[in-house]
Image (cartoon, rainbow, N blue to C red; front, top):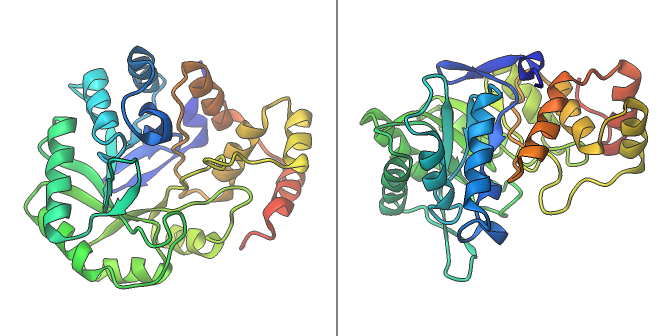
Length: 292
């Protein structure tokens, strides 16, 4: 079995987690909406995740909605002592599957209670405030009203730690003036590198950076350079893309998602993949120069 500990570990709040984690989004139905086609397969993936030593699972109650959290509870409750579950709030799903902001105090509070109920916990390990903005790209604007609501729920003991998703550097600084930020979850991968400076900024502060769409998301990464490097390393392009992220900065925590046990193991193999300086230079050329 793959040794995911070879990728190292990093702090996530008051816990140290393996850098190779798991994202539960794909456990819902097509378009992250409705139930999965194969619920038993979804349960099997989650149980295998824990067996492999993965101790960081990313989810949200608006996946489904409610579907992934309910599957996580069915598969893993009572949860292992070392498992950190991270969820996010700030959006809701329309009846047509659309993604809509849900940022009023009432909506945020309700979302926290939905997460607590569906996960079956008294307190959530980490809650990210998902800034809807441009959906997959950060946009400036004050988050003080929304983050303050979550900070109060943290003070009440319903949340242990807070983070941000789809955030700018300015928004991270604003949030930190309200409550500690333990992680930032933005779109980032080998080709999508707009957050290079933010990754380094957070690393210097000891804050985890968690890239969503690490393999390109709904538009999988495609690059002749990536394919050539993967062939030389006798690996898949996706394994190399994940390994590049692990090499990029020690504060990066990975949450690749899959609904397949086979793909789960393939993704985890990236933890053991060593990339030389020459290989890293080739890969860096795909998305431009990485900040030092």
